[in-house]
Length: 215
Ligand SMILES: Nc1ncnc2c1ncn2[C@@H]1O[C@H](COP(=O)(O)OP(=O)(O)OP(=O)(O)O)[C@@H](O)[C@H]1O
Image (cartoon, rainbow, N blue to C red; front, side, top):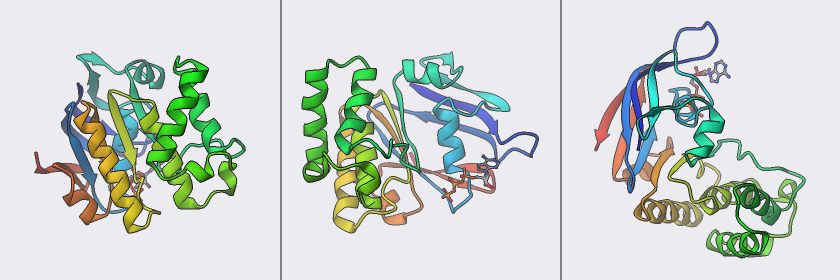
């Protein structure tokens, strides 16, 4: 269980972007994180991912304060970053295989899981294409595939449908929902009200504070 308790977080000496945020990220649930551009969605996800240390308050995972990103990875907290985080000079498939093998999956199993997950995202035909040669939406779906293939306990997805057409947006939403049903705690940052409405719970960020819209 990932728990954010009274967290204030920001950058350098500047005033905190978010103040006194508290939220429980529960297994089996799809939580939308909403707010206008600049509201702090990425900032909160980065704090949950161990990339940003809170100025006040704590992020805990199974009761232990989250130390840093390495600790978060050990605790199976997977982040799909807004800029996709893929290696552009590897193929779509290689991006998944490298991540899986680094995660301890055997190479043959990594090949199998890669093919299956790319297929779920409708990317079988792009598997052997370099990421830098894929469209923005295809790159975004590859990043989602990599995040899903890692099968984390917590999956943090940062604006991962912003470049997708309606069909692929629904496909990603369905896959994130399936992932939650499998027992993963999924947090999905979005500024798309339709996407947010399709999530069972919603936390809305406004003026540095968080409001629970649905729980
Ligand atoms: N690396 C950084 N250094 C300093 N300030 C930052 C940094 N990253 C973000 N900020 C500031 O923090 C605030 C929140 O930004 P953040 O990216 O978390 O918002 P967001 O809700 O994810 O926005 P968007 O929907 O546009 O991605 C903004 O005012 C932004 O300028």
